[in-house]
Amino acid sequence: MAKLLELDEDCLVNQFNSNAPTFARFNHSPPCPRPDLVLGIKPHADFPALTVLLMDKDVVGLQYLRDGTWYNVPAVCDHTLLINIGLTMEIMTNGIFMGPMRRVVTNANKERISMAMFYGVDPMQEIGPTAHLLSEEQPAQLIQENEGQGLVSVAP
Image 1 (cartoon, rainbow, N blue to C red):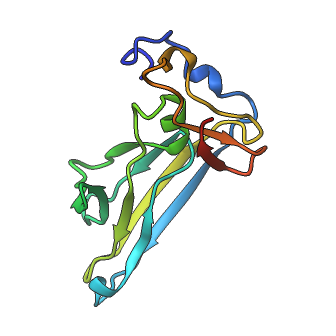
Image 2 (image 1 turned 60 degrees about the vertical axis):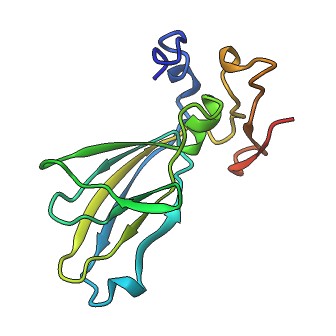
């Protein structure tokens, strides 16, 4: 990602230190006879920098929002890993890489199982855009502040 932005190779990785949290979440969505009435996971964007999702190949349930429409994200093969950009990475790249809005819908006939690994930065660390991505034409858009409270505000 840093190379795509023409930054030093370790520029983004150096934001992660020994206090950076990593955690897992297992998701199970049982079959639901009325999936039109239930969401498996409500619309959201992840706050950690990156999320690695092991998708269920047999049951489509993950959807991304684009231009006001929800689109299914199919698993293309067994053991598909999907990398999601989180809001922290969006902040660090000044909005160049954006954390998409997503949700999970249930299936009427099949259960859906997935596992997500979340990679964050030290919650006590203030996060802002990488300096090389800022200019008068492109000022800082967002900043994480307030000592680990996970609050995001418009940069001054």
